[in-house]
Image 1 (cartoon, rainbow, N blue to C red):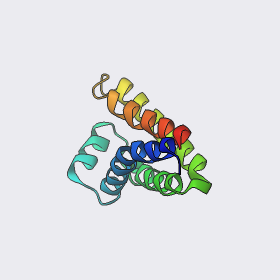
Image 2 (image 1 turned 45 degrees about the vertical axis):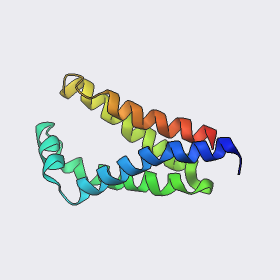
Image 3 (image 1 turned 120 degrees about the vertical axis):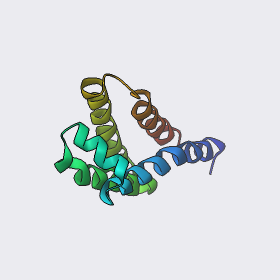
Image 4 (image 1 turned 90 degrees about the horizontal axis):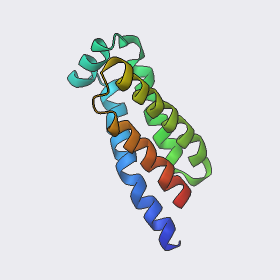
Length: 110
């Protein structure tokens, strides 16, 4: 394992942690998650998005399937950016950009 590979794995920790927590919160119906999806009028999509986040993380952490996980993560984060821009007035748009960017960066460094 090279130094760059180790750095790539370290960079993937915040993205994996955040998406795991976010996906779990959506599935177990945390108050914040429920309120956010009610505000956006997307209550029916909360659980499927949570499942996609967890599936993306699971695929991302295994080298053989990490490309597929990255594609799911980038898709979900792109949707989050679009929703933040269109429905929330651009508030906290930096966060899904950061998580998606870290995922892409760590993938290519690994």
